[in-house]
Image 1: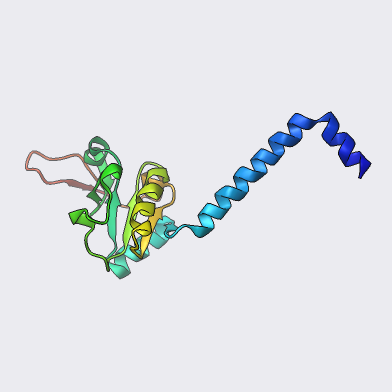
Image 2: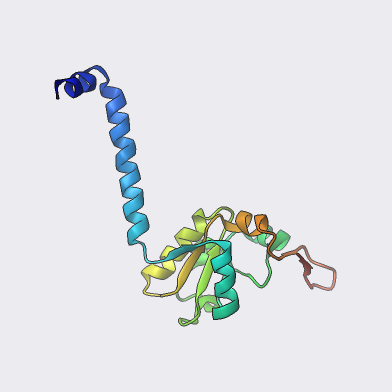
Length: 151
């Protein structure tokens, strides 16, 4: 036991940094376990879309959405996500949010889930994981206003 006390005495800063990192890890894990929405990978998201008619919501900015987004995704900027938003009004339809990498979509999912909505999801890895799995995306606009489908 005296060896531990000696180590702590000689390496106080190192021990404090280690304790801070441990506390951050525990708090993050506690938050993950107690949040009211689920994170899903692209496989589970595809299952929800195909079997439960989930709504896929892109919360990135309008420019990025216009440039490229998942096929059939609707656009609702992250700062406009609320249970009262007309595009998100159906309380029985599952919603999958995605953003660039999965962080903003967690914030959007938390807003909806904390309002009492169920079947709320955030796509792990965001649009990057969607593209990485070669899932279908729509890009740009033709002059007719229709979107081109890219697979």
